[in-house]
Image (cartoon, rainbow, N blue to C red):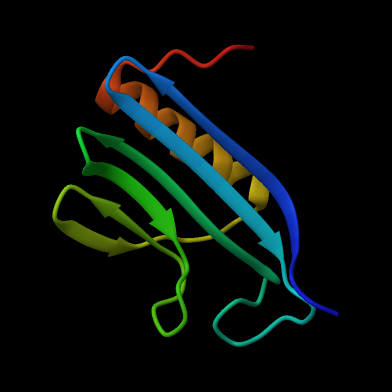
Length: 97
């Protein structure tokens, strides 16, 4: 079985672009024990403001500007909530309810 795309969201408000993509992997691994692969990006004018991802070899982590820090994955819902909160706080992004 190949990875299956669970979710894809892409939108722009003014000069801010947000994109979230989440895949379900066929198997869990040491690097991705939750069985998910994801990338969540928020940027302005081609520059990253905040990004969450779990690329191979790095595990779950968050980029904020030029810094990078580990991200403690609790659940998919919490991951999306944390990303959305960062986008709102850092760019005044307005999420539709």
